[in-house]
Amino acid sequence: MTEMPMHDDSPFYGYNVAAIQEQYVGRGAVGVVDFLLPHVKPGLSVLDAGCGPGTITQGLAEIAAPGKVIGCDLEPGMVARAQSLAEGKGLDNLSFQAGNILDLPFEDNTFDVVMSCAVTEHLSDPVKAMSELGRVAKKGGVVGITRTDWSANLFAPACPPAERFIELFQRGFETQGATMFGGRDLPRMLQEAGLTVDPSSVLIAMNGGYTPGPGNAMVGGWAEWIENLPLFDRVIEEGLTTREELDAMCAEMREWAAQPGTLAATGGCRVVARKE
Image (tube, helix red, strand yellow):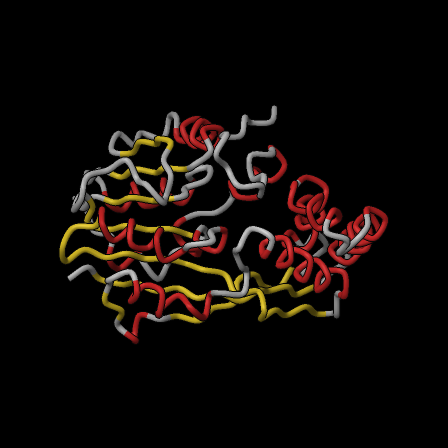
């Protein structure tokens, strides 16, 4: 598959790279946004803001049919990929379009359910994005967000290069005024955005799991990130690492991922808020 074009206004994270896109294709609504699914009912309108390749959005469209479901993403290449993956699925209620989560191309009070999965951590002003998600939600509607907090992580057996990866990844985010360690702030941010948070809806979760055989996809996939994301060029420029260290980390992570019986998990927070 050829590399998709990157939007001129995109941040430097580089998820347009084909190898990185493929890591997101396997995600579905079940398992990733389980916390939101009780709120998605047949006939409701749904927005997935920052939909990536749209596989989660497809699952939402299946549940909400015949309700209108829209996936939008900053990257036109991601939108094209999402449209391609949805072809032939018979989801007539599903569409994709380009859109910026900080300035969504929708009227106020448009959607019954608004969702954003692992997007706001990339932003220097996540509360602004959450306010925008609330703007397009209908009164009485819900806004469901997942936000990573990789300050919590588990690796068994120990994997020092993966821990170093997280450290450097976070430093790269910090150069953009963003953070991978901010999941804990999600409930407060949603309240600052004018939404109502039910404490019972706040879920602290670990993402990942145990791989009984060889091929730990999380840690092995991170080697692809090091090799493809512009973020790692920035951390080299900042003097935080060297290409030699990164190359060694990739080799060590792939070796770790190839062994059977590994566990890798990172933390995050998931919240469903309501627009009063």
